Image (tube, rainbow, N blue to C red; front, side):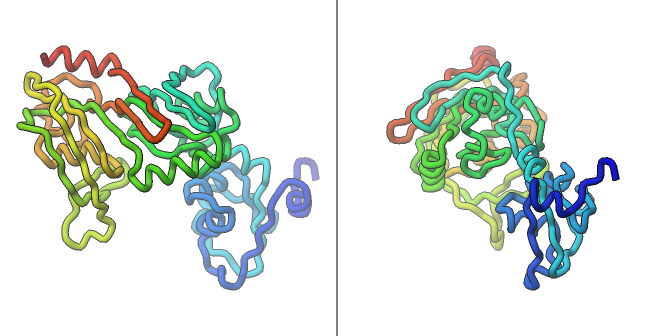
Length: 315
């Protein structure tokens, strides 16, 4: 039949056939794919959405993610579709500012408003899209797929210095350094109100909501609480705000934003953690990753224009 793709053809020439073991009977399809192919659950669902998965000759879709598998069934994954679904779309015309580079790594300057990595195949406008156009070797590094080369992250609206690995050995080294808190990360932040002095605080933080993400101080019994340590130094007192240098000794989602909000001094422009009475006029949260240092790596990012304009307006 014209246009028909038979199961044997996919298995033999273009796909990977996975037999469901007896111990895997009843497993959700998306979990099965994630475990057997060593993917994130989100990546497994993107495979389904791309039409890359078949069972019994039937092409499955995103809505089939929760079907329970039977022992002995064969799940066939198209190799070509899998590669397309997990490949970063390169953008040669996208601007990329490289602060420093070395064997297997880049320190790049991420603009505010730009996501670090795509969430779906074909998505453009991300930092990795620009990197992949100049360094195609990044594809498949580290976690692979749409997060290839990522060793740490910055929020979409946080600007500044960020490290990306372009080889597996450097990804392993840098990922370990971040996990073990051996990277010196320093931010410039504009906090509402006047902080009296330099300081340091240890807080247990927990993700209270994932979409959109929201972090709060943990309560007794929060099993997912993470210990965080944040240090700050007062650089300048502004009108109704304070310019700070902040060092994150540990690393956690929204650590600086949630910590300063807990102290009663949320970031200017932070619509998620700051009060509605914020009168600074900041269009996004005023947090800038100014410095990254680890062994031979030392990268600095100057204040972006919007950050400098808010400081100037508050002087």
